[in-house]
Amino acid sequence: MVPSNCPMTLESYRALLLDRAYRPVRAVSWRRAVLLGLSGRVDVLEHYARQVRTPSRTVPLPAVVRVPHWSHRTPAAVALTRRNVLLRDGHLCSYCGSPGHGRELTIDHVVPRSRGGRTAWDNVVTACGPCNRDKGDRTPDEAGMRLLALPAYPTALQLGRRGMVVGDPPPEWRAYL
Figure 1 (cartoon, helix red, strand yellow):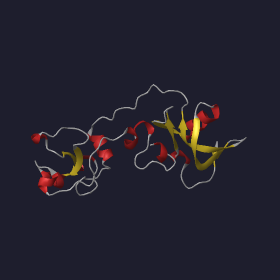
Figure 2 (tube, one colour):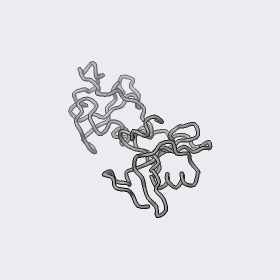
Figure 3 (cartoon, one colour):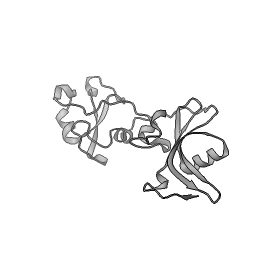
Figure 4 (tube, helix red, strand yellow):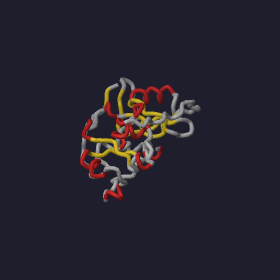
């Protein structure tokens, strides 16, 4: 297939794969989505404005496809790991917003463990070293600090797991997320 001219690279296109109940399962490459659509194994619900050409026809790029049968896969639980917390928080300090990579950022318990705080998605955030030291063994309110965003359990889609996207999904996907 030869791609039509477009400023966005063709390899950056992915299609959101939904199960029969319209639940996101994963993202697949544009090639896989085109083949699944042409073979009738999926229903194509949304297309991108972009097209690809074969020697015999022009095919619009699928953006959202749905498997017409039940999927026995359950969405994977997102493990609470340092890497995943950094991905969820965008490699930014949750208190001051400064960026960091690798060991520049720490994992901070909003309610300190010494005060009964759990190690759970809704109680851990990324923090730069100075903010973590300033907060110490206190809650953000006690330390006079404010969280830029409340911590929450992320989905695999938000973290880029299993071929999904990191960051904002394409506009064609939003109605299905």
